[in-house]
Amino acid sequence: MFTSTRLGEIELSNRIVMAPMTRDRAGLQDDAPTDLMVEYYRQRAGAGFIVTEGVQPSPAGKGYWRTPGIHSQAQVKGWRQVNDAVHARGGKLVMQLMHCGRVSLQANKDALAETVAPSAVPAGVKVPGPDGTPQDADVPRAFALSEIPEVIEQYVTAARNAREAGLEGVELHCASGYLPMQFLSSSSNIRTDRYGGSVQNRVRFVVETLEAMADAIGPGRVGFRICPGHTINGIDDANPEETYGELLSSVAGLDLAYLHLIRLPLESFDPLALVHARWKGGVILNNSLSFEDAERIVAAGEADAVSFGRHFVSNPDLVERFRAGKPLAKLDRNTLYTGLGDDAKGYTDYSSLAE
Image (tube, rainbow, N blue to C red):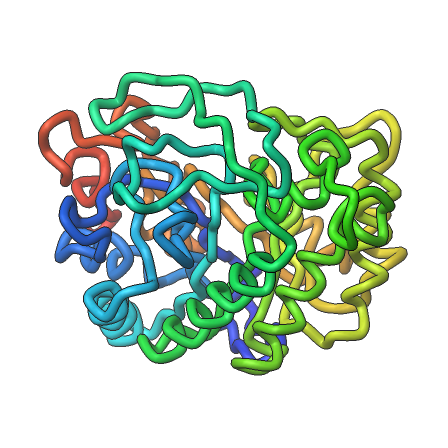
């Protein structure tokens, strides 16, 4: 876990990756990274690389209050400051691009930004509003066929903006029931055109988006995250093994940097076995793994790296703690998404071993 490796064009000093985690601390007026976000990421720069929290590629892509974007110059400037602080400590950043699609509230977004999805099928879940009170997610408007290339181009522009800000690359968020997963799933995608119906059509949006981003910034700087079989945010795919097998086969030849797998324990199939059968590129594995689990997985060649989420929240120096065999600080779940009036609380106030 403490050896270096390479995923595409991205060099890792160790195989301990910080997983993407929504924290809801972006600027109130412009969804740009704040000085506090700069410090949060700087503290955790010991990771092999950091995958940022989900970042909106467009105003319509915003689902939650105070999540950051990468579609304005103010946001690009803010991310450049984050990136410079991480680089100054020898760390590296990859930006996760997250379009929430139907998992969204109009109250959380710009007044002119619609809630859109592959089909006009509501998620049937609640989303926290600006005051934190959960509300029924919007009923989305289905994309017209002519709009889909525009959405793909928004991802491409976001990828270019991430590189302009100095980040190493981007990760397409195809999990958690957000837009790419909505296209993949038979329950949320009931289109009858070339982006819906057959499994080959349902994977098309993700494949074309990854192809377009790879063309724009280089395939070795593009990764993607999946979670086959997850029923989060109203997703209920009829045959996830078929869906993700087709997706992996369709992108296997793109020479992308990595696949980031959230491995669920499913009765019907093993997602990691499916990945090994259909994907020959780099693999980052995730899902509440201990350091001992991670060492065994990497040593066995089951993955190139392992990502940790909650451990990195409460342990800014997680790599050093793992290396020294020290106990981990406990997470305060009450302050994951809000500082309860103080944005620093539960965000940048966790202590390091040195402190």
